[in-house]
Amino acid sequence: MIGLQFYPDKVIQALIKELPNPRWSPVFAMVYIKNTKENLDLIFEKFRGVAWINGNLFFKEKIIRDNQPVDMNWYRNRAHTTSYKYAPEAFLLKLELKKYALNTCKTYILQFEKFINHYPNKDIITLSEQEIRAYLQHLIQQNKSNSYINQAINSIKFYYEVVMGMPNRFYSIERPRKQQKLPRVLSKEEIRTMIANTNNIKHRCIVSLLYSAGLRRSELLNLKIEDIDSKGMLIFIRNAKNNRDRYSLLSKTVLKELRIYYSQWKPREYLFESPDGKKYSGKSVGAIVSKAATKANIKRRVTPHILRHSFATHLLESGTDLRYIQTLLGHSSTKTTEIYTQVAVNNFKVIKNPLDL
Image (cartoon, rainbow, N blue to C red; front, side, top):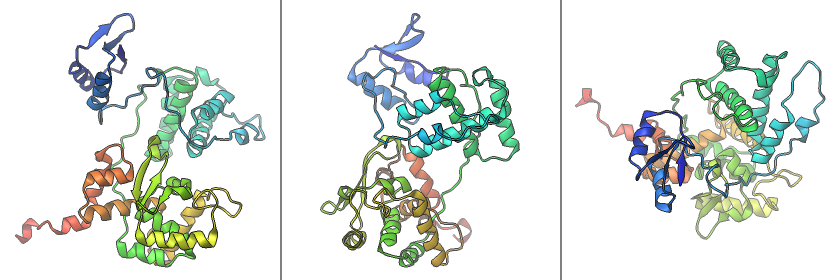
């Protein structure tokens, strides 16, 4: 049988009633249906966009992230002081075993240590929901961003729910309402000017690839030489966000530049490498984009992600179907991609203002 555990929710309850012959198990205190491939597929389809399905307790073969192993020894070997509380070993070990991305590990450790040091004289395990709420209220009073507060909640929940195995303990902790911020984009002319104002062929390829393939910074850094498919004019993006592989477009112009770059710089494994042959740093990529924008006389702050936003917006303005853009960006839902319809300026130009009719 397939057992379905969920927190009380009228929408989920209504959808479960639409499943084939759902029954209640008083022994396991959950709804269940017959375990067939059709029913399993139906569950994922039924709840798509409504609820996130965690199948770790159901599937025997768990999906393991293919991230690079994270070295936690730096955190373990830090010089300790008696006045500061450090993330416990179990916290570090679980991050290693889960193979979380390095940036996620850094964020979780930093945020959790700030939380436990807010209560220096209390044992972590004795802290209550009320004290967690008080800490979150403290962050709000400090005018911390919604993103910052959500990171704090994630790190706290990770300890109690994942490390300590207490899945329901802090379910009722409220999260800040999600801010609906529109993505900032550049014009095609601004991006061309940025590319023209890069320092060298390597920097030009980095800026061009971020834009022309809609890459996240981490995806660019993880590109290997064999991921560039010059015959199919595609770029293979492995193990991107949510552990999804995907393909994106390879520009003919960028391919010519990449061939020149490869002959001059001769990278060995990763497409972009540091002088010692290791993977290029994210900080360097950010600096390259920022410097190119400054030279292009763009007054606002430009990040690698703005180039990704611009890629999606320009595709939409040229008439590309939203579903294709979703696939190229690696979004799991069209709802995420639909945000670009609000910044596609060319689409607005064809709408006649009612005052002018």
